[in-house]
Structures are given as C-alpha cells and as structure tokens.
Length: 174
Image (cartoon, rainbow, N blue to C red):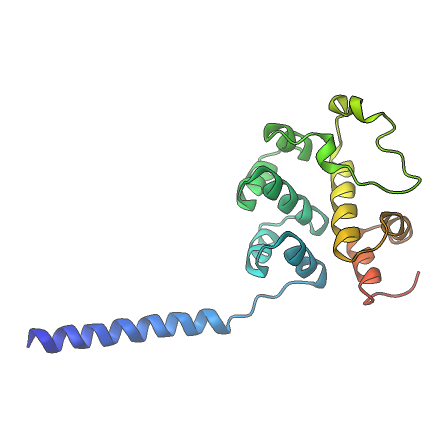
C-alpha cells in the first residue's frame, strides 16, 4: 500500500512539475526592439529586461542599469533599488568605483569632456550625461555605426528609442 501511495505521489509531483514547466515555456516575454537590443548587447535575458522595465525604469535608463550592473559586477535589481531610493547615476557609479572614464565614448570631432584624460578623475557627470553616454556606446557598438551618427540622430529625434528604430531600419527617415 505504501508503495502505491509513493508511486501516486511521484506521478502527481511529475504532473505538477510538467504543468509549471509548460506554463513557463508558453508565457511569452514581450519587450520592444530597443529592449531586445539592450538585452542582446549586455547579454542578459529578455525576461530580466522585462523585470527591470516592470519596475518603472525609463526606457533610456535601462541600458544604464545594465551597464553599471555589468561593470560593477552587481545584479541589475541592486542598481534599480539604489536608483529608486533616490541615488543619481553618478552616486551609484562612484559607490562602485566607476569614474568618468568608464563612460567615455570616442567620437570624431566630439571633445572628450573638454579636458585632458589625466583630469577625468575630477569630472562629475550628470544623470543626463550618463544616460547619453551609455546609450551612445550601446547603440553605436551594437549596430556598428559611428558614434557621430548616433549623436546626429539623437539631435534630430530627441530620444534614443527613436535613434534605435532609425539605425535598425525600423524607423522613419529624418
């Protein structure tokens, strides 16, 4: 009798595991092309990106979360937690020893913070600076386009999501 009960319990457990696995497998994670590009560039799952997005992180801030997490060897949720507690991107960067040089993106004709490299340790970047530099790096490297093109498109479109649509071939012409 005990043997039959264990077999039945085992069968029920296998059915439960199969059911959970099936539900997980068929639940699609919906992310935008911009989020998918960030997922691919930073080598994180689309599900992880969706979790970050669901915490009300702005689209253009999502690559910053992933960049800091990657560079500082943190989980993205740690970065999001600090941001939601009111820390600036610079505060989070300094806390994990990321200086201005971590955000530098070489681009022809664009000055490097207007200072020689040996003075970068005195630079304090604003949230807007960090968002712009991380998105510039992410989009120019992921799509293999010159950083100057990303800068030009950003000046025309006003946001990096529109820039991504344009350089991926899914946006209108500007």
